[in-house]
Image (cartoon, rainbow, N blue to C red):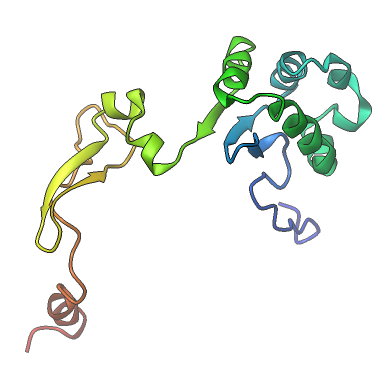
Length: 171
């Protein structure tokens, strides 16, 4: 603990003390998550983006120094990403270099994502207002415990009486 000496500030879409670890603008209204916080990952990222010179640059030598120089890290990564009209091409390169990364998907893209669908992350429910509706389930999958709930979300006030009875007690 820092005993209050270290007071992290808001960091938005990026980790406050490690970089690169956040969301990067890939242009064309597309975004990518990149997490390359240890020296091996950083080295692979610099080679993937064609900037191996940054691997040993004192401004970027540690995750902390990269976080302190986050505007420059963002500029370099986003500059590289925006060279691609198809963000999938950039992601393929990052994958080749084993850089932890993934696209940020729109709802429409998510509902067509092969891995998401393969994991059965959509459940169909019968909603009393909307009828049949497909809803996302939690992306966490346990081998012996189901996280899928086939019930529709409660309506406003549906459980008020039950909750109040539990708080006040049945009288």
